[in-house]
Length: 302
Image 1 (cartoon, one colour):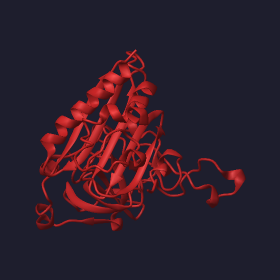
Image 2 (spheres, one colour; image 1 turned 45 degrees about the vertical axis):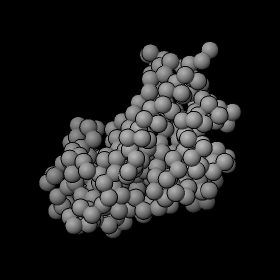
Image 3 (cartoon, helix red, strand yellow; image 1 turned 90 degrees about the vertical axis):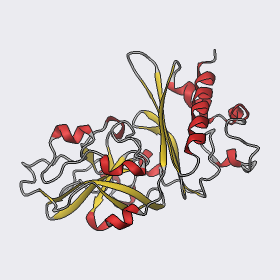
């Protein structure tokens, strides 16, 4: 089991979002401790631009999962640079500061485009939707959204743009995307959905008697299991930018759980994004709705 997602939680590695869950387009660069002297181990200014290399998998509100049949319908901005409003609306990721980069311009590419990306975080090839392509400081950058939710960016030579023919051959699939409002603290919700002692309460829901290995819980960070997920490639479960976030990446499946609290109402929101499901979406949708209801009951239990 690998845990490369920990790079995000501890701000180690490539460029990451300051506030992914807030749909922020402001970025910073954090270098690993081995790359800079002890006295300089702090946030540093990027010498050129810092638009390539974002990784915001938890931005499920700004960029929810997209069923493969709907990828051509996502909002985009073509033929010009995006405005601040568009960068905050989900139509783009990057708003370029033209005072710093007056020569920035869009690339000659019509979007959206389906592409693949070898992710250093999930240790697998990701299917992505490119929604922005631009040249900044003689550097070609693309902004994209993950089909399973969230967003990222990379240099153009790091992604493989698929042809229309290749895109049409992608197997049709769907994602589960749902939010549960829970009258409990984030800590209570976190305990309910991860505590090993609660595994038995989810036993019938996750169909423990139908081919799932008996030791699945010892390898999982969540009390949910999809039997067709394949081998685990990367896992993360920790507080990320003030919110509890879980992401498990398998060969053929990703599950994301984001726990946030409304400071005014004191209600906790559990956002769940799982998929892709190819053949059994309706069955898994019903199962996950029951799973979320069980989390709610356990969390609100006095």
